[in-house]
Length: 559
Image 1 (cartoon, rainbow, N blue to C red):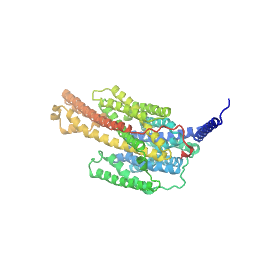
Image 2 (cartoon, rainbow, N blue to C red):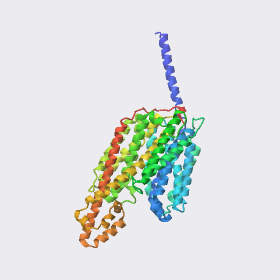
Image 3 (tube, helix red, strand yellow):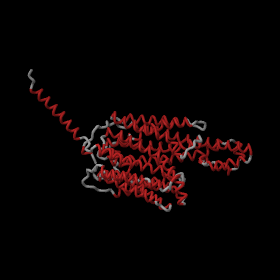
């Protein structure tokens, strides 16, 4: 049979087109060897693990540190200084990594972090420790966002979910081991080793990245740094974070100090946005690009909003659960961090499963929705807890909540990196920055809700006879529910009541029950507030635009 020429020509064109597609896919394969990828991920995950471990391990050692350096009035600034310097520079590092490449920025962050760790361990006064912790935070700010961006460079979008899930598991694992390691070190060695421990592990990770990590060069030929934008960002976010950190603790929310911090922050941040928009219109490179949100509200805007909502709910809930377990249920633990171990374990599982789902399906919206739904179910289980609940009921709630939280950790990073392959550093760091900001807001808001609702709930739970008979000084001792977490304080108060015989013991038990009831009610209010926040997040996520995750990425998209 004779084949017509036009059919032969058409077939030839189809074959050529298929060959072109195959050749294009071959050129789009990642130019990194398996050895480079494996060792880079080992180094990156080690650094991420250290940065999270440092945040959790120090809290356990804080009483020993304060006792040694004699500066209880400055204790809040050890954490606050680190919070500020590890949050504010995040967008700056992300932008610089887009301009100069990931490797030099990551190596710089590791060196500063390790130097700050060594200096913090050698501190002789509280002022020195605060300064060195601030310096350490400057390095830590580069580690998490650049690690996320490196994953975006090494893997195509469809593979990133799996590795972002592994990265999220590293976060949770460090959060579990931190309190354990901190308790063991402070009991068996000097508290200084909670800082020194970073150095040997960090040096190994540093050497691995120096010699085995690919360059991940920037495509930018002419590099300009937005110094004015960086200054405005620092001047705007520092007072904002200070306001949320100090409000409700050292100053009232409506005090002139807090209102001044918030007012100044708003003014500077508005100026920062106008300045960044102007630079963007001129085709220059601002530290933060408002166009990312404006041009893709249903991707970048929704991702930022849901990330903040997730963080507000997560940090507030994780703050309240240990209080309920120890104060209301009477659960004993070496430290409060151990109470959250079941929650952390299921969050690791949820993070890994959601990452695998992204890789297998190439879609993310249903994973994001499912994560929020599971989170809502877990929060509803927490809301059902009361003064008569058991630890088993709390455990079930934590297990469910952990799966929901873990499922949502890796999704939005993959979403924004998939939408902006040429601005992975900027997009990733902006997301991490808003996550940190949401956590700070969540702790402040939920903590304030708990404190403001406890005293009315406690006094409402007091029997009328106790309110009439007990002096205000005795009742005032229980206006702080943390007395439930101090066995020494409780034993002294119990001994005082026991001196009045059986009636004194009965009065003490009724008083203690009122404290537990008040604390349970105030924690309940935190969970209700958290539910309202996460429900808003569920509504928002339905507006998230779905862009199928690509299975490969073009070589010219590597930074």
